[in-house]
Amino acid sequence: MSKKKHRGEDTWALIRESLDDFRPAQLAARLREYLAPRLASSPRHADERSRRALLEGVDALLSEHAGAWYTHGFHGDLPRPGAPSEPPGVEGYIERILSTLGVAHEWLCTLDTYFRSVALPPDEEDRAAVLSDAVRRVLELTSEAHGEEEAWHPHAHLGLGWLLESQGIRRTERLEQALHEALADFTHAAPSPEEARRAADTIALTAVKEESAGRYRDEGVS
Image 1 (cartoon, rainbow, N blue to C red):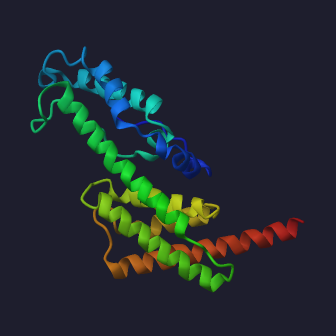
Image 2 (cartoon, rainbow, N blue to C red):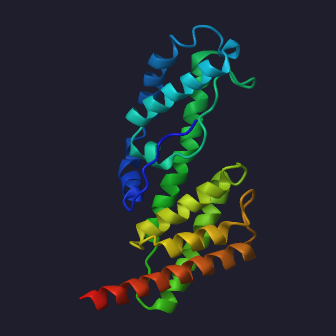
């Protein structure tokens, strides 16, 4: 199951502005209202179609009540009902959902705090160096939060894209290609420090070059 995502240059702004909207107690109440009548019988006995419908309903509820950070910033998988290790009943399932959301929300808040601390200098060489350090730091933060998950790679790509957006750097086609190529070898595990440095240098240099090219194009038009 996957939610419909809306990609745009203002994606990070939407996420950042809604991070304070995460209220686990209120979400638990909403989830309880939705799940209680649907999990009256053991979810372990439900067929795959019923479980999928339940997950889609939970996703729709969270999209409506959790805030834009969930709609745009949560890219993991919601827990499936009836897992063998899950405490029985509605409360056990709600606990797992909120735990999963909590990890994602904490990662986004950590990124937000870091993004606000980054100050890119105007000089291109210095700008590339500072941006490279920022890329490496985002990779580290993402590895700490999601390094053991199969979805590490898309989380890393998203985090770096949001870093660029937070700094007002336009994600051109060439820059998107550089992001994909720099992370291509790390689909299942986080890079080593040296690998992260090389990837970060590539991304930062491309970003600064694209900014410079964009300024020249704008000056030519004017």
